[in-house]
Structures are given as structure tokens and as C-alpha cells.
Length: 96
Image 1: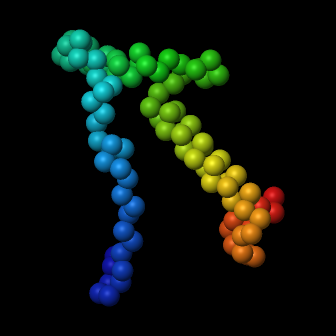
Image 2: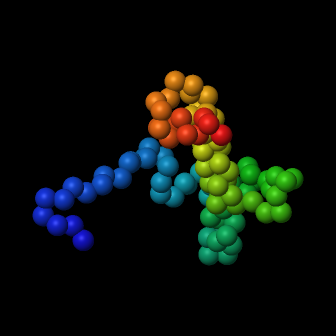
């Protein structure tokens, strides 16, 4: 609960394309009342076959993989920063 005078954290806004329903994954050749799953996911399924290293694949797997890639980039960037200030998070990562 906020009290008078307290600042609220403002969430970082993502690009407009990153939220909402992605209409490009719809398979409009399917009738939604007959096969809603393929209507809602058909184009995505066609463009995203299950990778050989995984038993299944879905949008959440895709999201988790993208997060891992971004975290790896952040950590590698921090580890490569030899001029990071002493005691900073980047310096602590670089010590590993």
C-alpha cells in the first residue's frame, strides 16, 4: 500500500509489438468453431518445428530460450568489462 508522498516504480514499457495477440500466428484457413487450436496456432506451428534437442516446443520455450540468450549477453558483457568500478555488479561478475 502506498502512502502519501511515496513514489511508485514505473514499469519499463516494451515495444508495442511485444504484447497482445500476434495475429501472424493464426491459420485463417481453419474454421475457429471446428478446430480452434489449429486456427489459433497453425501458422506458428508451421514456422516453428520442434528442435531436435527438445521433446516439445512452444511459445513459452521460445520465450525461455530468448531470455537465456539475453542473460548470457548481459553476463558476457559484464565479464568482459575490465574497467568496471570496484564493488559494482559488473566487477563481481568479472571476478568469476
